Length: 50
Image 1 (cartoon, rainbow, N blue to C red):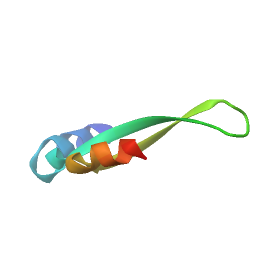
Image 2 (image 1 turned 30 degrees about the vertical axis):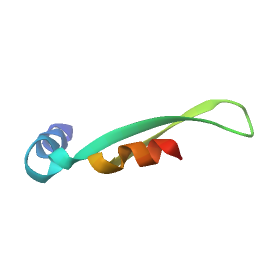
Image 3 (image 1 turned 120 degrees about the vertical axis):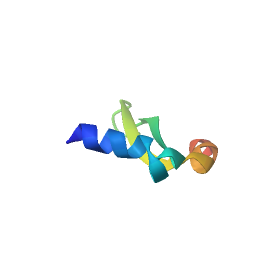
């Protein structure tokens, strides 16, 4: 199943997307967690500024 998802993202409309993985520190425990999102390639810089 994962191969189909990867294959569709590399062809056609999927090329305009990027996977963004951001490391966020938890205020309660102090541990780091990772947040993963699929966004348009044009919006990557805006997302990382937040």
